[in-house]
Amino acid sequence: MSIPTIKQVRAFVLRGGGADYHDQGDGHWIDDHISTPMGKYPEYRQSRRSFGINVLGTLVVEIEASDGNVGFAVTTGGEPAAYIVEKHLARFLEGARVTDIERIWDQMYNSTLYYGRKGLVINTISGVDLALWDLLGKVRREPVHQLLGGAVRDELQFYATGARPDLAQKMGFIGGKMPLHHGPSEGEEGLKKNLEELATMRERVGPDFWLMFDCWMSLDLNYATRLARGAREYGLKWIEEALPPDDYWGYAELRRNAPTGMMVTTGEHEATRWGFRMLLEMGCCDIIQPDVGWCGGVTELLKISALADAHNALVVPHGSSVYSYHFVATRQNSPFAEFLMMAPKADQVVPMFHPQLLGEPVPENGRMRLSRLDQPGFGVTLNPECQLHRPYTH
Ligand SMILES: [Mg+2]
Image (cartoon, rainbow, N blue to C red):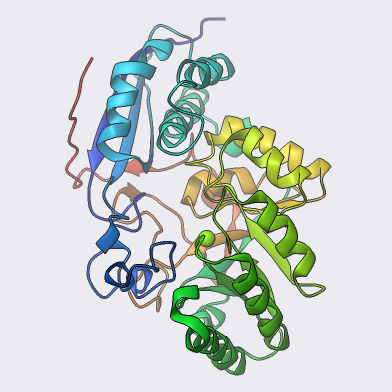
């Protein structure tokens, strides 16, 4: 059987929203006084862009095969990631068969160990890996979820992340996750305001709708414990990413401290099976939330997910649009998915990676039929109106 080989790998940078979803204009809820680890510096408290959250931009990886098919993927990483793809990783792909995904992953990971392991390098490897799966799907004319072993459900259901759970409820989502607005450096008054916001939202959505807090790594153990205990009477479903990702010990203790029935979740800034092994073996959380564009790609997420399954932890990937949807469809331990509300006021459903992808499906009434994912690869194309910039070649 003749299998196409990889002819060329190209890396581009894009600005303005999309996979780097924090790269938004003024007045967007995603940059409105959100509690962050930089909140201890008053000058960086109001806006995450002020400390550079959008400094990288989107990485686009394109992989061209000998049969003319082109796979691609987007993630964050921008120009430094483009450098790593062109100058370092491309060598492991060009000339290989399009089916050599496992070996390519292993070579990318091991060859970058001395400067990689987590963060930007694994984002970059994830982008290459996703582009490889997209390419394989196009070569075989099958959606990625089929390549992963097939879907276990006919439709996905979503909770919404954004500033307006009350509106998300009207749009049919099963829950709403709000950004926490005040961190420990805003003291008792800030804690009170956080709980008041939750109380107000609970009043608006009634007793049964899920409400969650996303704390974006910004709290300490004491504050997180007090927030969780204070939030109990308002039925907070989970407290997300309360602590810095390196504080595994803190997470384990927070999980012991949290009120019975309230879940502790984390992992969007964790990477690889080894990072998630720490979270799982130390009992840090009830749900792991790997981002498929950051944790090592789909190849690695399959391993992370198997490990989570053996620890009775759910896998509910962070954001990442179609790259998550194709995965979630295939896993029994991923019963629902996240949808980031990228409209500036969180008042309507828009594609998560707008404007970069064409054909990007969105939930309708909080749900997505599997048939929306029945296209070769990840089923999306790059929007030709986005200006691709290729800063490096090889
Ligand atoms: Mg989060």
